[in-house]
Length: 253
Ligand code: GLP
Image 1: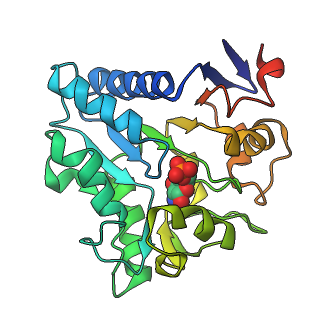
Image 2 (image 1 turned 135 degrees about the vertical axis):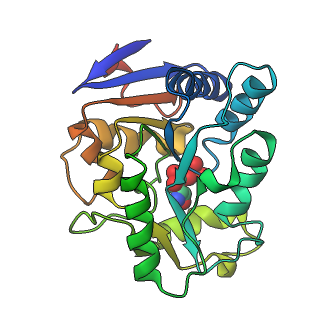
């Protein structure tokens, strides 16, 4: 089932695997059409299957990452690269160590930068100087966050330091040994940086995301639901599994 809502392409897949395959096909198509694409990459449980598919496609010679450059959305703060819960570690483990991207072309906010302001400024400058993001992959938090842009009274525009919501800390504690180990802060791309991406691919699976998906697509545009701003972006593809699409299926049919 496929449809368009407010300029967004909505694709509902039967399973997580199907969602992941479709997402990987879109990323690979982007890279095949423009081999020196700038990709915006996301972490979390959601895109793990997509990365697995991309590695498979790379091994089958269906996509080549040699000239691709990437910018990750976010990183915990403070966290060391060697910590197996850092997004640096995650990206390496799930994607980079399996493909042929050049190390110099990989960008992830530095989770132990001494001068955070400088780190954020340089990160945005680097994205800008690279020509901007061609395709930004996003997941979504149960509270509507994208990257680590938490619900707030205003939208933060550039890369910035964030205080994580209790809901986010709780949700992400499943990846840590205990909730105390989850960092309380993070560095995240801002909304302007995300919105300036030429195309956006948002993925969500599982029932826990169903309510926020409905709000993101049909609720009012508000910094209280950060992902709702995507209603204003001209080129968004949303791929969901059936569970995440639970409250919108009749609206997109
Ligand atoms: C994390 C990340 C987001 C991610 C979201 C959902 O905290 N900062 O980029 O999209 O929360 O995570 P998950 O895919 O594990 O549900």
